[in-house]
Every structure is written in C-alpha cells, then in structure tokens.
Image 1 (cartoon, rainbow, N blue to C red):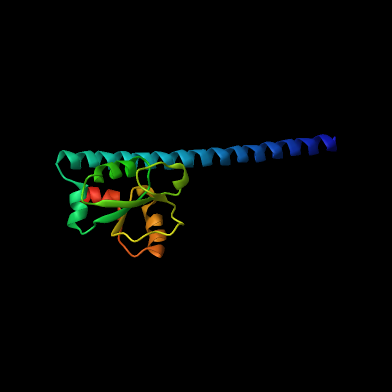
Image 2 (image 1 turned 135 degrees about the vertical axis):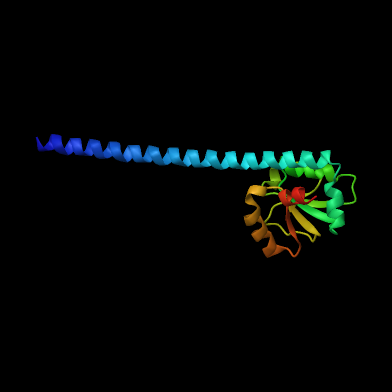
Length: 158
C-alpha cells in the first residue's frame, strides 16, 4: 500500500511540474507575441505619420538639410530603412552607409555594416528601429560623436 501512495504522490508531483512547465512556455509565447504586436503597431503608426507628412508636401530631406545633416547613416534596414533610403535618393542628403545587425544577409544600394564594425563619421544617424531606440542610441553614443535621431521624432517634427 505504501508503494501505491508513493507512486500516486510522484504522479501528482509530476503532473504539477509538467503543468508549470507548460504554463511557463505559454507565458513566454504570449509575451513574445505581445512584444511583436506592439512593435508592428508602432511601425504602422510611424508609416501612417510618414504618409501624412508626404500629404502635407513636407520632406525629410528638407528637414535634415535644415538641421545641417548632409551626410547620414541609417540604423535598421528593414522596411522603414529601405523606404528612408529611397526617399533620400536624389536629394542633397547623402546616405553614407547603413547599420544593421543582420548586415551580412541584406542587399542594398549602400554599404551595410554591423553595429560592432568601425562606424565612419557622419553628421547624424537615423534609427528606424524605433522600438529599440533607447538601447541603440546608448550603444551608438559609445562609438560615435554625432546626433542619434529617431525616425519617429523626425516625422513628428517635420
């Protein structure tokens, strides 16, 4: 009889530990999906603001030139970074290079380096990865002596 009680206790204990493990895994999945949802909402709102800026016939290039930024780097070469590069093509603002942690897997019309590489001097770096701006800014300020600008801030100041 004691063997049966001990076996039952082990079974219950195993079930509790198993449920706790499943609960932890589910929480991690929910947390990840929540972060991704927030990221994509932020990017949607950013792009929506960009459309409004364009509808008002305002230009990011004019904003940058007006603030003395003639040679820049773009941090983050996903959709927003590529769109910014396209917008600045044929303007007086030169995109000297781009920075992206996945530099080796991205094709672009400009050189792309990783944040760990040597970063050439520019007038400013525009960060398009807006949900990670604070962390990126902190890391870049350790390596560079120029303004680090959020694409989000630019679009609301234009």
